[in-house]
Length: 69
Image (tube, rainbow, N blue to C red):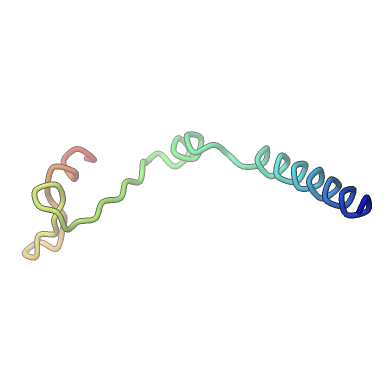
């Protein structure tokens, strides 16, 4: 029983160390947005008047689109 407890503790320590080092290497979302120069925004595109696809121009229009632009 002591073996399994020690094994679980060792795995938890290694997992925490790996997660910490992975997080230290990733950039923040804000840093990625600033480097890219654009903010990507998603919308469903199927709820009028918020956002809906205009079949004549094949583009989206509505309040959400205006706010994003």
